[in-house]
Length: 523
Image (cartoon, rainbow, N blue to C red):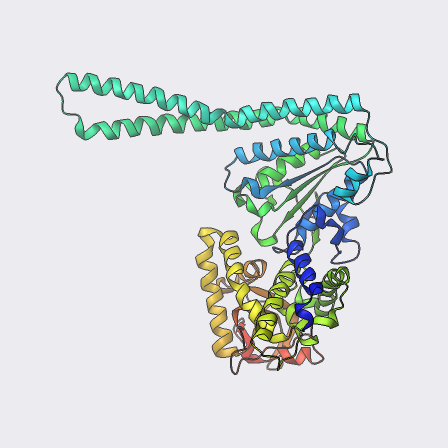
C-alpha cells in the first residue's frame, strides 16, 4: 500500500485543510514569514500590514490577538469584510460599533478572568497570563459605558432608514389625496399619476437621506472626544497599551477606506491606543492628499509590514513554505521525504507564488490527484506526490483563483484587468514561448500600469527586480511569471519553457530579448 493511502497521510490532509483558514485554534501553527515580524506587529506603533490573499495577514493578527490577550492588553479584532458594500458614513458607524463591541467583550471576559482558569486560557490562547485580572468594579464601569455608546451608535445608524419609511408613507398619503381630488374634478390623470407618485417618493427620500447623512457625520465629529476619554480610561486601567486590529481593509469601498482609517486614527492620536490594518496593497487607499489629508500616512503616522514572501526571494520563500508543511507532517508522524518528491516541492512553491494558503491548498489537492493516479495503476511516476501531480492540482485550483479575482477586482475593474492579463498570456504563449516576461523599469505606459494589481490578485508573480538583457545596454527590467495554473494542467504545453529563474543559471535564464513585453523606444 502506498504511503499516500495510510491513516497518517489522511490525518495530514485533514490538518492541512483545516489550517487553510485563520482560526483561533490555528494560532498554534503560526510561523513567521521573516524573523521579527510578530514582534513588530505587537509594537506600540500604528502599522499597515500588506499581503496578498492567503499570505498570512489574518493569521498574524490572530496570533497578535492571542499573545496580547494573554498579556492582559485590551484588544479588539474587527473583520472589515462584514461591512462590504456599506456606504459612508454608515460603514464608519458599523466599524465603530463593532470596535466598541469587541472591546466590551474583551473587558467582560479576558480582562477579569483569573489566571488560574487554565482551561479558558489554554483553549483559546494556548497560555495563561502572568498578570492578575483587572479590578472588577472599574472594569464593569467601563464596560457599561461601552454598552451605552454602542446603543447610541446603533440608534444613529438605523435612524435614516426609519425616517425614510415614515417620510415615504407621508408622501404616499399626500399623493393619494391629490390624485383623489384631481379625479373628482374629472381631469384626466392616468398619464401623470405614476410619475407624480414616483417623483414625490424620490424627492423626499433623497432629502431625508441627505439630512440624516449630514446628521450622522456631525454626531461622529461631536463624540470623538468622548471616545478618546473612554480609551484613555481603558489604557489607564490596563496600565499599558490597547490595540485595534482591522483586518481586510480592501473589502470596504476604496473611496471610504481612508475616511474610516482617519477617524479611528484621530481617536488614537495622543493615546496609548495602536491601530494595525491588514490589507492588499494595490486594492487599498489608506491615505489621501485631500484638504485636509485623510487617513494614515506611511512613514509619518504608521509603518508598513510586508508579508509578501515572493518568488523573487525563492530560497527564503521555499524554506518558509516547507517549514509550514513540515510542522503539519510532524504532527502526523511523517517526514516530507515520505510522500513528496524534490521536484514536487519546487513545483508547489511555483504554483503557490509564495502564498502560504495557496501552497497548502494545492498540496491538499495534489494528495487526491496522486491517489487517483495510483488507483488507475499508474505508478510509473512513483508512489509519492510528483511535479505532474502538482501541475494538475494547480490547474484545478484555477477556478477558485478566478472567483477571488472577480470578487476582489470588482465589476468596474475586472474587465480591464482581464484584458491586460489575456494580452500578457498571449504574449507568453506566442512570442516568449515561456512562462516569464520582462518589462522595462522606465516604461510607464497604460498597457502595464495594472501589472501590480495582477500581482496582488495572484495572476502574476514578481520574480526578479533587476534583469539585464545582452542586446539592451544600460537598461534594467522587472521579470514576472504567469501563475502556474494558467499554463499547465496534466502536462506543460509543447515548446513552452518553464524558466528556472531560481536555479544556478538564474540570471542567464531570464536574459532573453524574446521575453521583453514592453520597453521604452530605443534611441
